[in-house]
Length: 533
Image (cartoon, rainbow, N blue to C red; front, side, top):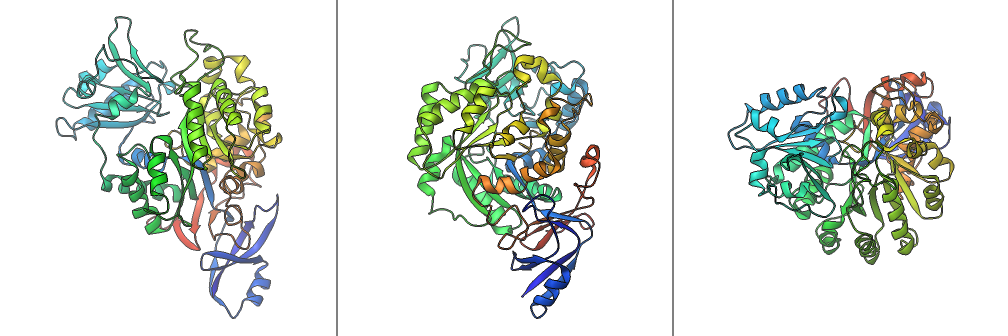
């Protein structure tokens, strides 16, 4: 017994332009597709429900790289992402502090000084002035840097004599005083002192995150969360109590190298892998981010000749980590933003190729060189790109790295033309999670700051862009037989849009709205009834 879905246009994503009139679904799986009359006649004795929808149906969107818990934290904590000046940020933090008891930690998410007229990072003295009785942490939008006030540093035992950890930077002013600004691995010094989230907090963050993801048509996501919230076991349990229990979103979890041994010991014992929750490649970081000039470049930063970025691991350490993954028959998923970071990863992967059938994931791959693309073509490598980085990084990225590197960077079209499988993600909470924004950014490549188009030759077609969020993420994790298309045998996971992305003007793609999200044949989001669970 099953349901017929019909009414609007249904794009299967089997091939460009292919559409059908109706879908016959049985127990959360697509049993058949075709015309309304054909399916009504063929299954007339088995149809228990006829579901009419008004709009354009696509396979449900999949985000190939995000942080589910981190996105939820942004929703339940003080969000400073949209502060347009340091004054606005300071006012928000001070106002929020009044709602907290003394000595309670104030943790705010997402500042981006590049949005300000004077892009200078907040100093600890400014936080001390407004929050003397609270330890304060402001997390930068990239999550590769944070600012702390003096009370937070005192609780963490940090002073001017504290040594920088490998792969981290502790900034000081010209007088040798700590500014409160910590990059990459140096953040761990602060995190050790921060209160550890409990089980209820993690579950609240996951549920808040999933509610939001579903409202944007996302039915699945590849996430990396397992090493940051007090241990592997507790975090996995939080996902089991939410994702697996509620069965309205499909999560594919990367396994950070610092807890990979816990995962290997637990695999097949403490958890199950099913259609809702599964585990993927071993995640590691090789460099930082462009915003804080810690992405590792092959030349000095154009706007700061004193640095070319930060290597999180030595070459020897990087190779050992990849060897560790191979010993567990695991692929790796590697954060790289700078071109030198990519080069180091390719060297290590070439020396330690994955087991036959596995593919390694390069996450971000923003600052690029043509010779590295040629090397990637020869390896079993997938690239997780974040199309909205074009709209949020330009024009300041040009000044950051210089024209010689930028002209071959953010090369989404080149990757596809060279036959490299790419999947699209948001890196939420670092960028906005809405996949419509990613589709629009990859097609239009227009800056959100000055409205100009950058590296236009790297623009994708609408079809290529939608594949980044449907077909391709399913291929990346070898689930293209059940995900990413509207085709028999696939999950009945759909998104219904108010406009046809293949028909609207390209400049108006980002105006498309989600009317419904369907997971396993069940409506889990409706714009008219937003409290559906």
